[in-house]
Image: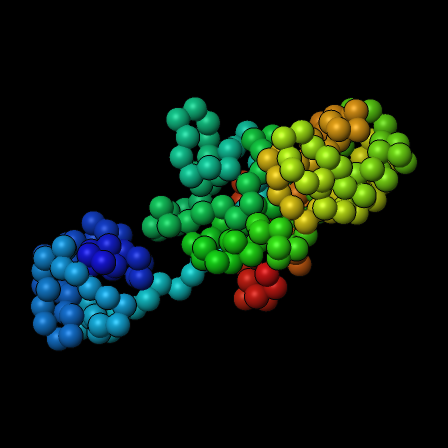
Length: 229
Ligand code: URA
């Protein structure tokens, strides 16, 4: 891999910063100054920057209390994105682990650790997501049973995995699912003839949305929260 790209991948430096360091003669590969950003490098060689052996980037993990009106994307021309709520370096390396719709609020996880993000979203890892929701029409016992059993949604090969639902009152419930199909909760309720008016994610696995976070605020995950996934 090109050394400028490599530096940007394994350290906190951006590609532009890496190029500048190379130009300044600050980068040594196996003790030799390398200034050409196209220089081919592998993970096994000893690289130092400013005399220090490579400082590899520590992965970052955040929870955000997503407000309504923001889309779960890194860039968008029309809408505000959740990334605009974060004030971090090297934003281009951060990704959303399990998106929420523009009008859904609550717990959103953001990280630069791709494998961890995969464990959050892959149905195979059975990482449960809990939502609080409010519906337009009363939620019947029959609808609850159908949603809990698994429901065949349009354009899906298999029915949804079994879910757990706690009825809170006629129009509201707490629903726990193990998948994250596109608009899944809204489609599950549409399939039983109802409509979700409000949707808020409270929990992912053992990570619970911190009630100290106002909508739009975020914090770093604790090491216990990170290792719970
Ligand atoms: N299900 C939905 O329908 N929307 C979300 O944002 C999350 C789950």
